[in-house]
Amino acid sequence: MPAQRTRSEVPFNRHMLRWAREWRRRTVDEAASKVRTSTDKITEWEEGTSKPTVRQARLLAEFYERPFLEFFLPEPPEVQEAPKLVDYRLYAGKESPSQPDVEPILRWAQEVRLNALDLYDLLGEEPSRFPPSLYATIDEDPERVAAKVREASEFTLDSQTSLRANQRYEIVRILRQAVERLGVLVLRNTELADFGARGVCLFDEMVPVIVFGKEAPTAQAFTIAHELGHVVLQDGSISGPLSASSDPRRVADTERWCNRFSAAYLMPREAINEVWPLPNQPLDEVTDDQLSQVANHFSVSPHAALIRLVELGYVRAEFYWNKKRAEFVAAENESYRGFGRAAYYGTRYRSAVGDTYTGLVIEALNNGLVTHHSASEFMGIKNPKHLSDIVENFRP
Image (cartoon, rainbow, N blue to C red; front, side):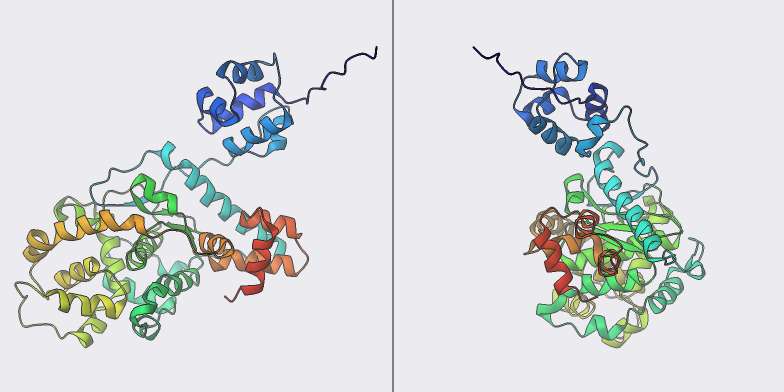
């Protein structure tokens, strides 16, 4: 009778199994649930008294968001930590998320940035830098700074105000391109909304990063411009709620400045005067039709438009605080979940990382500097067909 064959055990490093789980802040219970085994079995694997199958290890690697081959390493690799200094633009009434909550998003954004630096190096190009001449401080007039930045980004009034009603969602694409012309990576991550956050700024002189989330396109535009304000200030510190959720006297100076910068960048004073001449004295109130006229002209939200009109002296602040603020906040908290993923996977990946980063990947691929497989990894794509779709349809 032939001897019974035993399955040879794959030499996974038990220390790496535990390190990966703890690095990703997963519990033993969560890991066991993921691979459909017992907590005792997870403990055995991490203590070395037994080992997982290859399939189980691959499931754990995916769950821990670590490369499968790391389980064979003799010791943990050096890991780029998520940036500690970031700005969060929040939904009204939401508390600032804790660092562990958003670390996966910050780590992803940092990884995209580092990949961009690698791609610039492969292509023999200098990495993009935000123009030093555009840096400012909160002591400077945000109106003047916004006008200067808008001109440098080639964000023309015609590209913004010529959009028809069924085209206003295009404002996000147009604005992203304008901001990326300044050397900023503008990324999108819909999971930000899960933590009550609208946007994040990771500042660096070389390839700074803005991340915006899942909102109505007009609200996304304000978030992108707000985060651009943080880049202008060379600021990556954690900030509080946006101004509409608090009395202005309690809003941090930096947040107030960035909100004013965003409003001025998207709705220049002179351009508003052309649409609606400044009244001799602030009005007690404005109609929804009047507000929509301004908001639609600039493809911004009525909320942002009214705050701007109050700031410029078109309408009294009491109208906003006593009558419209609660209405806007309630509407935003109900509606921001309604804007989800793009219709096609290829579009979704490109939307996440933006045109600058996508263009770097495609240029490296077309020049034979990276393989199709590596290009897919740079884009975070598992299905090669999605990369082919992006390459075929890419028009920067």
